[in-house]
Image 1 (cartoon, rainbow, N blue to C red):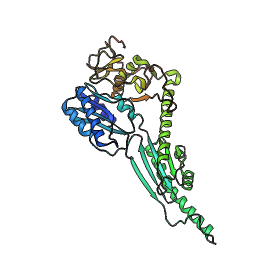
Image 2 (cartoon, helix red, strand yellow):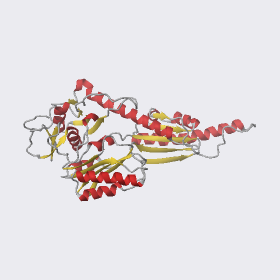
Image 3 (cartoon, rainbow, N blue to C red):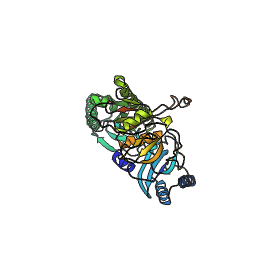
Image 4 (cartoon, helix red, strand yellow):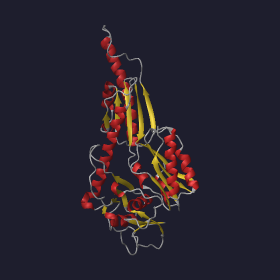
Length: 401
């Protein structure tokens, strides 16, 4: 995955840029895949992408990465060279994008990255366990460790005889020792990786023994799944469903906590509305930028700098990176006009602010989407507005669309 620094460097590099945001490889017949690829390439050409950029994207789209279906790809290309190529497990969050212009289309990438929480998956049994550190949206685990227990424990249910209680105690001690080793691995990874949650599946008795030996910090993150995924022939559908639910819950809690922080102390560290958020971004004052998903719309092909689009802002080629219509700065020139969400997101990335997309999902799969206008952007600030000792960027003629 492209690092934050790499993305910032790319955004400071002059364009033009070609952006493709589309479905990844699938299990569909080859003829269907080829037809979809052809449509994508035609849309890139219609957007004005040069042949070198189209050729680079064609080669990337043909790579069979082995990702599960569905998957999503984001590609950013300049001068025929792929600068960003990221693949995410799961469907697209919004419409496809095929665009060419002076600036990248950035929000689809940030929308996926906003869901990339880390979590642990622990599948345990009486004779060992597998512990994986995973990131939502990524195909491969970041790390994987296995614990192999001793194999001289006899099954707990045996034929009668004077030695049965002794063998039961012996087996229990071995199982307990094995889960102690598993707990050490889980506790270490919890300290090092700070996962959002720990999904625990496996044998019932092994799960119980492991729970009893986890540190309080790890135990508080447990999401227990009643499925023995280490048994012969067992599937992981229940585990994956529980992980998806836990991810949705963790993201909702994280977003709610950040919004609550912006309201704390009477909103002392909050900027509301486009004008206030732009002013804060110009000071590199924004810690977290919040964008309603309804503010996000896929730009028309070739319309990355459509000056007539409603709600546009001016993207600058140097600090402070963003300006309102009619606002000028001596040390920075205009690169393009951008839609509100794209312009704010670009300035946020360039000033090391986190971008959060406030998704608008119905409470039930068959529920209708609420009819409402998009909420204005807002931000959680690094320091209080007007605090002494911070640089003030001077602009002229401030006005907002």
